[in-house]
Amino acid sequence: MSGAVPAGDPAAMRAAAAALRARADALAGLADGLEYEVGAMTYEGPAAVRFRSGMVERRRRVLDVFTSLNDAADQLLRGAYAVEEQAATRPFGNG
Image 1 (cartoon, one colour):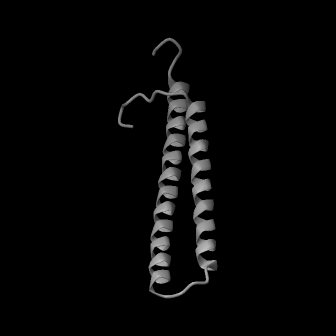
Image 2 (cartoon, rainbow, N blue to C red; image 1 turned 90 degrees about the vertical axis):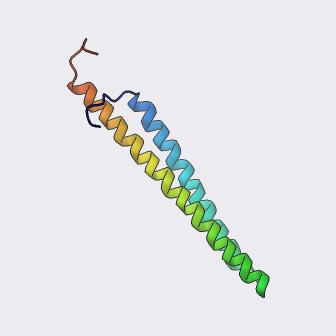
């Protein structure tokens, strides 16, 4: 944090991180469900191949969002820790 004084509410930051993780988990569940449903389809032919390929790509995108949401949650948790550390080392009345 190169000299910057972190500001924020650690509890709110942790709550936001938990909300992001919950959304990420919901997306992962959706991706898993889609993978199952697409795998259970019984049709064949060129349209089926295109559809399945498209669904593989969509699932990959959903999982990329899952990773991004978890990364953002991690960043919020690191920020909450930094705010707490800064508050713990700052004497009362100086800021």
